[in-house]
Length: 208
Image (cartoon, rainbow, N blue to C red; front, side, top):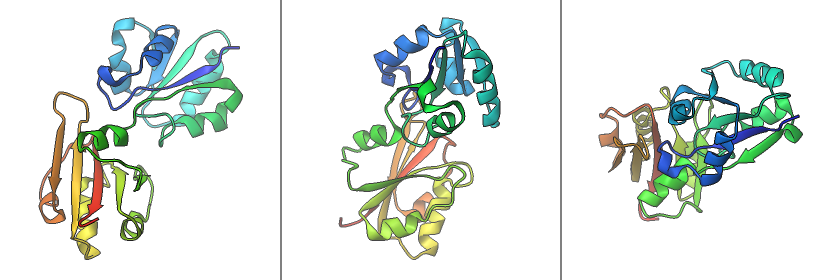
């Protein structure tokens, strides 16, 4: 039986995909992923299984095909940072999975602002209630994966409500793409602007 590859493809642009990820994907019979990630490999003319929200469908499809086909599940960023890896391991089995890491959005953004991320707490707000404000108060700063509900504007609003304004917010939009934009501003200014749905945020306490 073939092992299922879980492949991290970085922040988005093909230049940030590791060579081993290309190799594994090129050797696959079927690619599984969201539309944005699948489109990167459209040129390979592989059979595709696009998923949107129902993760159980992925496992059903994989379990029905993994015996005879080489399958690669493509995930954004790195496999070990809030990706599908845990879910797939729990539902398919760790012994059935081969992991190929990728470059995470936090690695990319911190490199762009010339900072180390070793003292920052890293969180995803995708469908999660995280007390990141408490972590910010106690530490140097936080990195947040946002979504439509937890947008940079909403994050700035939460900071103002918590009376935490002596911070700098970095918003990375569409990282690695041609329309990439990195903004550095205050909560008061961030709250009044509109940002891409593909955004990540760094919040740093001033004077730290």
